[in-house]
Amino acid sequence: MIEFNFETDFSLENTPKIINWITDVIISEGCELGEILYVFCDDEYLHKLNIEFLNHDTLTDILSFDYGLGKQINGEIFISVERVADNATDFKTSFTEELHRVMIHGILHFCGYKDKTESEETQMRKKENAALRLLSSI
Image 1 (cartoon, rainbow, N blue to C red):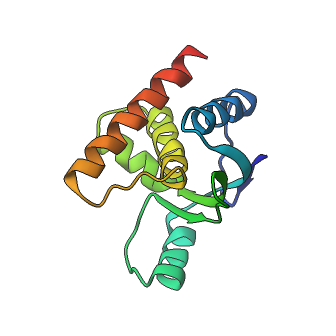
Image 2: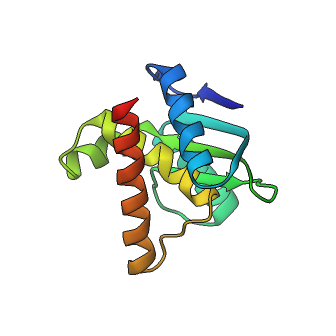
Image 3: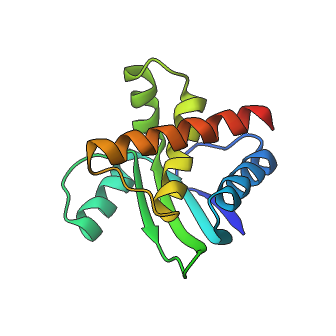
């Protein structure tokens, strides 16, 4: 089950399509859908979580908490829509594309992908791009 919670004045469009897309990506990675909660928030909300749980005093676009059980994907994904908007401008892409990239980025972490090294980051970008292409074809 995939759920969405909004801690800021933001709404996600076309949630049935998004849910199907995320589920398809999870299955394509050989995993199974458990329970995923997306929380859309502002910078302040996410910054507090970043300090409290990771001891990082920085702004970020996403925090993910993995509660997976084997191949079953479970977790919480917190996304700052303010960071996503700023990143979209910085990366010269649309807000919607950047939002979808960040949303699937958290899922890919839950599927086992990392992005700490250059090679891991390259692999993560390839997976994100493939997932974005899948979304556009749904």
